Length: 100
Image 1 (cartoon, rainbow, N blue to C red):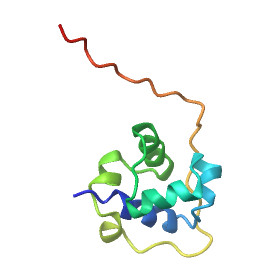
Image 2: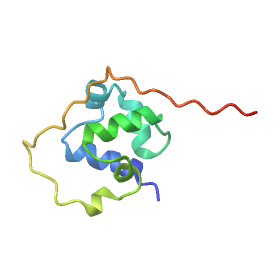
Image 3: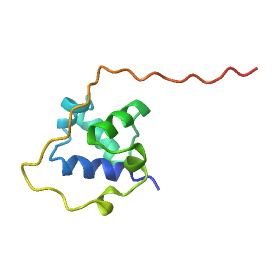
């Protein structure tokens, strides 16, 4: 089961962030992030990787697990923000093998 949209919302709220904040951290606009959270659209693979690193979860946890039901109670106000991930790093794409 794909829990990705639900997990995005949960992780963002648990971190005390608003949808508008995602632009500064991950370079994702509020409207795009909103579409991800409601499951209207899906991010590209490199964005999913950046999101998982930003929130400190594995790709499997982000996509497959229901983090909200498996997680301990959220921290109270004044919690630590997630660590920033350097966006300068490039992710190389693996090309499909040539068909002969």
